Amino acid sequence: MKKILVFTQIREEKVEENALGLINKLLEVFKDAEITAALFGQQLKDDWIQELGKHGVKKVYAIEAPELEVYLSRPYVKTMLEIIKEIQPIMVIASGMVYGEDLIPRLAVHHGVSCAQRVVDFTLDGEDILFHTPVRDDQAMIVSKIKGEIKFATSRTGAFFINENPTGGSPEIASIDISFNPEDMIVSHVEIKEAERTVNLKDAKVIVAGGRGVGGKDNFQIIREIAELLGGEIGATRACTDVHWIEETYEIGQTGQSVSPDLYIGAGISGAPQHMSGIKAKTVIAINTDEGAPIFNYADYGIVGDMHAILPILKKKLEG
Amino acid sequence: MKIVVFIQQIVSTQVKLQGVDYFDTSRVSEDDLVINPSGKNAIEGALKLKDGHGAEVTAVCVRGLKPEKALREAIAMGCDNAIAVKDDSFYTDDPLLLAEIYVKILEKIGEYDLVFLGVEEQSTSSFAVAAMLAEKLNLPSVLYAEEIEVKDDVLRVGHVLEGGRKIVDMPKKGLISCSDSQHFTPRYTSMRGILTAKRAEIPTWTATDLGLAANDVGKEATSLIQVSLSNIVIEKESYIIKEGEPEEMVDKLLAKMKEDEVKLGA
Ligand SMILES: Cc1cc2nc3c(=O)[nH]c(=O)nc-3n(C[C@H](O)[C@H](O)[C@H](O)COP(=O)(O)OP(=O)(O)OC[C@H]3O[C@@H](n4cnc5c(N)ncnc54)[C@H](O)[C@@H]3O)c2cc1C
Image (tube, rainbow over all chains, first blue to last red; front, side, top):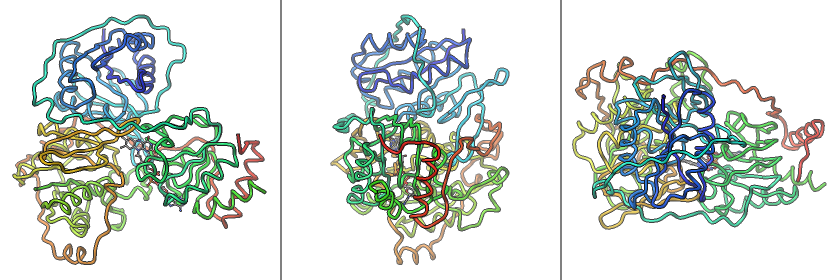
């Protein structure tokens, strides 16, 4: 049976959702393939492995080692290469989280081939797998195929949906013998600075979010006021939390919080996929000076204009 | 410390390309040819190290119609040297082939400590080049960097991570890809920089100079075959107000939302 190897990770003590969404999509498209997952760490919980099984994974390479406690390119590449050698999959894929995007191109290099990146769809053309990737700030779509026995790819975060009623069973657990040398650990882990999560945006019905266009810490006040008027919460892009215009907890997106409000208003936000992938809103309103900003692709309503002029008026109207 | 920065020249994403223009960008105005934004972050990363600790920074541009233009801007920002690498045979839409060209460039440059790249080449959304290059050269590497601090014998690098930021130590010989964090916000060019840039000699290297045969890194060599490229048409129906005084636009928005019975508020 054809095998697809999926690199998976744990986030906040759970199997990362993008990986589960990806697995769901793979099962849908590759009906005759068997999904094998790779999950590395120092202490892996059985719950995680069972969760993968429930979502349709038949076999999990659950590899434990102190060197694999956190992701580092070399030890992870080394371990993945061993698994690939053992199972000879038709495809090796990871969701496009930071680690997945670090890992997959490296594995491809070891097999002398290129890789497809940030894929939002897979289709089949006879024996060929077609990879669909949006480019140029989502202005165009490239469809490509990859030569070689093993295809390497990453999927875009937020592209695929999780199966809400998975019915899979307990997966087979596999291991391999692997050892590491000092050269493998040449880049060394110091610490992970976790963003302090003081506000949970998950249940917010309205989110008013600001981006780099806000222009400064004080300018977030108007965002706050409008959020308050609408009975909602505020949100921000990483560009804003990085410069401490606003607390880290408000970051929305791949590396921030995931939100699903009825209404999301984005002001001064370009609409990078890493930000938008965290948002599943019923209605999106965008305010941006640049008519070509990708956020307008996601918007139900939009104003091409200066947020510093628009927002105070909007506030007045809402009060009035 | 010797730093090599790889930048690319792209058609500004402000310009909407249509169909054939993706492949034949020669009709694009020179004003619209810009350094890929992410590449500018990489230049800034290298220049910060130069400012704080002294370094010789060489900018290299492979992709683009007028690499000299991009490189003059790199020099104006503060890079010491620039090299344009151009050859009609290059197929640079494949990150693996681009990485192969970079390997040859670094071989010809010879001595270097650090290699800087941007996280992404916006025109093809390729983020893979940095990882591929690091792997090919077996260089210690950190991708998606957001900050760099020089310690005694290591670089302490913070990089983007889901849920926060990860800090790692890496040797002072290695590869870093730079995100668009504050630390890498590109500086403006100075008047003096612009003058230096004007006078700068920018050599052009071709495939032959790099010891590459045309079919080594040409379209025939790619393993990533483009089957089609099409503009994305947004099927979603949306109501975008593009003109008017601010007050007029807000009124229009609110009226339309009312008409659609979309509630503004929780
Ligand atoms: C691995 C990785 C993970 C990431 N994860 C996340 C994430 O989870 N969340 C996240 O947000 N980002 C994330 N990022 C960063 C992301 O790629 C973008 O850089 C970021 O989202 C950009 O933020 P922005 O839209 O605020 O800024 P920009 O992209 O700089 O856009 C600013 C926008 O404001 C507009 N503007 C300027 N002035 C005005 C004005 N006066 N009025 C109206 N509009 C104006 C501009 O036209 C522009 O479109 C991640 C990056 C990487 C590499």
